[in-house]
Amino acid sequence: MEQTFKPLSREPAYRKVSNAIEEKIRDGTLKVGQVLPTEAELRVQFDVTRATVREGIRLLENAGLVTRGAKKRLFVTVPDTRDVALTASRSLSLQGATFREVWETLEAFYPLAVELATERLSDEVIDELEAIQAKIAKADEESGELIADAMSFIQLIAKGLDNTVMETMIEALNMMSGESLLQVIGNAPNPRARIAGAQREIVEALRQRDKVAARKWMSKAVADFSRLRLIADIDFDEKVVWCDDIYARTTQPS
Image (tube, rainbow, N blue to C red; front, top):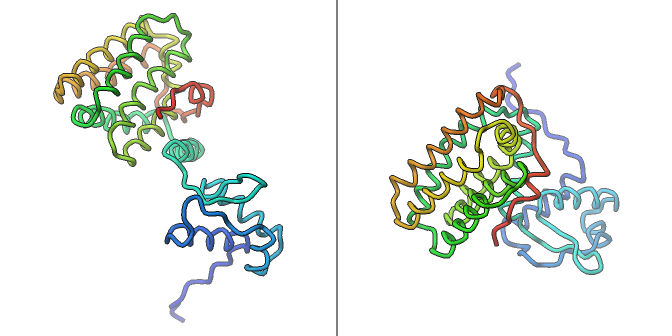
């Protein structure tokens, strides 16, 4: 007999609770900052056990859609860019993303981001980028801190693009590339001078609003890493290792 219908999904009750609340958040019925009913009230409204409600709420908390405030009351929230990037980067790492996959994507995004930045970054943000460059050029940092500052430089550019999707993607790429960058820095000659030199040229191009020069120097910086990874003997087909330590050190642009 021809099969016309697919089997019905048998979602757990706690997921149905989570989905129902999430739908109200997405359609605007529940707004950011609004207080949700208590767990006891939700239990009655959904006609489920308190354990089911708590598990449904846990899914929403993990997704960044609700948070607990005073007296453990639940408030509607939305995940910020960094939270989304964090979730994406960890998920891709768990799925087996390789250094090659990350780097090929990074090669496409970084030059485009800095080109857009020549039109969109304010002078104040460019000043902040120059301050990061100066710190890298002068400070005697250990490798982890050096990479954290280099990642902060890119993240600050992404933050100023007024493009949430690109900002999120670039931040996720930064998180996944940290470990491979750390391996390169530990084995490459004059890593500080290489990074600071490229950043200096990028900052100057941004000040001049020069798209061609900005893209050229960002592309050079990316290509330089590809050459240096051969020195560091990094296998680009290995899975990326998500580096919590480097991520925790990066500057979080306000």
